[in-house]
Image 1 (tube, helix red, strand yellow):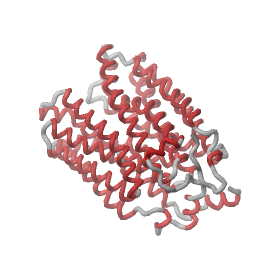
Image 2: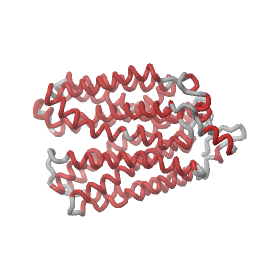
Image 3: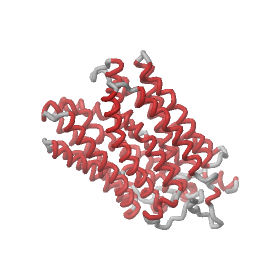
Image 4: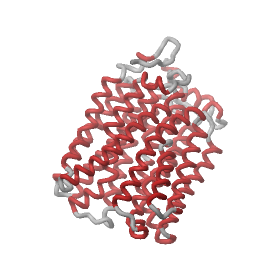
Length: 435
């Protein structure tokens, strides 16, 4: 693209695309609140309903597998019915399921509610990534992805605050009603506010030109049987399968690690977790900003993504020292940096899908890769539990694995991706699959 045209595109007279990004941030925050509120309320529910640890393990396992199917299925649905209805359908399903948790009082009831929750929540990320690909040019996508993805960390921080407040006023059942209702309110606004960029009255011609300023992958439909012909699908599968189990470990076992290693009580673990998730928010946005800035300064798209992936992977390496440290806050900082690096890594991993896939297949590709990686995460959680039982809660091996997988994933992604994005562009300005 010529310099004058690029300069014109940077002068978009409206910025409604960032409003869309803010809406994705809010729904991702609600998604994680609905997901994490059960863990926050676990002691209260356990005392009230007398569930065993095995019962709760089975409930979480049901969610994990349903989430994998929801990731794939809801991604496919979004590509069929569009972003507006796809994300609304997913949010309605998981919000109603979240509220249903307050109506059940048995292991079987919680399993059913958790299965429906997983099916709906699986639609959030495939649809959000497709939305970013629709509303942002390549140079801005990683930053926009990092911003909306930071909602997952905000949701994880808000869940205990909202849960504690609501439970103190109205009981644990009401906490599920409140978080579910928040999502339904968001859905009502989303249906009013969202239209495609070309159809939206608040998008100026100059902003639309900026959004469409890059050559894109052909917009035609891509059947599921052809998804594996695109490098972006393999990039996401490899990256997700290797790194998502580490993310699940951090989210599910860090409080237990702090208790086991540093004897931090459940009442005192709140402040370390807030510090960790604040760092994670910074990493999510910074990871997207780095690659977006590199691209704006002239670095080739795939090169910018790979450089950022490598930087993020390097930042996860020191976490292997966490079990060896005597200072709790030193361990908290290392874990926070590793989780921040994961989110920066994920922002670019998500964006590579939209860099290499037709817009009409982005949600399906993210859904397929996310479904596979969620199954890997479920089995890895079971394996981690067995390792910790066998070693007397020695976390050394697990942290070492978490410090290694990002570098391995980055190396594989380097060889899976074509050398440049431009090498995928045909003479008519579209992108093609490269096997």
